Image (tube, rainbow, N blue to C red; front, top):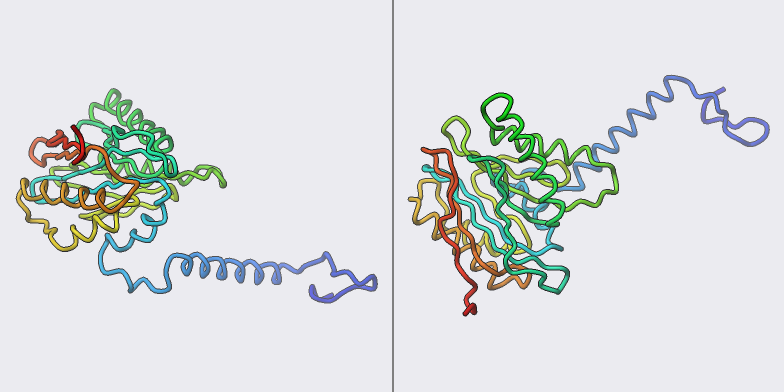
Amino acid sequence: MDPSEEDESGLRSPWVSQDHRRETFVSFREERNQDESSAFCESPSVFSSEADKVRGMIESRSAHGTTTVAMIIESGVVVCVDSRASMGSFVGSSETEKFLPISRSVVATMAGSAADCAHFIRYVSARSKLRELNEGKPLSTRTAAQLLASTLRRQPPGSDLSVGTMVSGIDDGEPVLIYVDSDGARVSGSLFAVGSGSPWAYSVLDAEYSKDLPKDRALDLAEKAVRTATDRDAFSGGFINVFFIDKTTATWARERRLPPPNAT
C-alpha cells in the first residue's frame, strides 16, 4: 500500500516504506536548513565586514544594557567597557566589572546577563588555570573562545541564556579578537562593539578606526566610542574602563578608569 493511501477505516497506513521515510527526512532537512539560513538574513552579501556579520546577533541582545568595545591594532588589543548594570529601567549598579580575565594574556568582556557571562567565563578561566597547572601554559585565545562557544552550544534548549562576549588576547605574538554568544556563534574579527549601545559606538568606530592606529589614539577612540554610547543609550553608563593587551609582553593592563561626567 502506498504510504499516502488510507485503509478501510479511513486512517493512514502505519507501514511507511524506507524510500518514503528517506524522502521525508531529506525534505525536512532541506526545509530546516533553508529556514535557519533565512532567519538570519536574506543574503550574506549584505555584510561588508566581519563586524557587520554579527551586528544582527549583537543588537538582538539589547534587553540587558551595556556597551563594550574591542579592537585590534598593530601593537595589541584595546578593550573598553562601561560599568552600568541595569534591571529593566532600574539601574542596579554603576560599578560593575565587565572585563573578566581568563589568564594573563586572554580576557573576555561581559554583555547580556551578568550571571550568565560570569558563570561561563569563569568556567573557561578555571579550565585555563587547570591547563596551566598540568601543562605549563594556559589556554590560547582561540582555544578559550572555542571552549566557551562549545559549552554554550551544549546547554539544554530553553535555557534562555544571554551572553555576548569578546574574547581577546595574544596568540603566538599576534593579537586575536573573537566574538562569542549564547547561541554558540564564534566569529573572528578586528573590531567589535557589543551591547545595547553598540549602534552608537559603531558610528564612531566606523568613521575613525584603522588597524595602524598608535596606541594612544586607539585608547582615545575606544573611550570616545563608549562615551558616545553612554550619552545616547540610557542602559549604558557609569565608569569607562580602558584596557590594553600588549603584543610584546602578552599581558593586559588597565590604562584608564574614567568617572561619569556628573560624578563628584
